[in-house]
Image 1 (cartoon, rainbow, N blue to C red):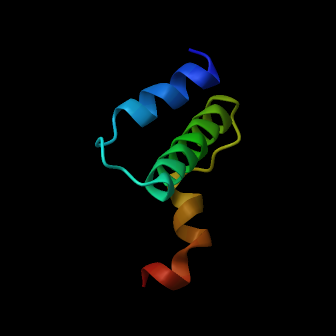
Image 2: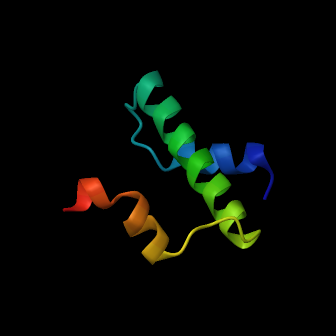
Amino acid sequence: MTTKERAKQVIDSLPEDASIDQIMHALYVNAKFSHGEHEIRDGKGVSQEEAKKRLGKWLE
């Protein structure tokens, strides 16, 4: 799926009365999730244990 097709799909999933801010936010979130998925597939992710270590001060 092309980026344009994915953007159309995201926009089409929103309510008809969505504001431009809501549309931009939805596109931003979708792009960030897509980027994260690519990084994980490329082996750039961190394990759950490593994430816990990095975020330890907030998880206590």
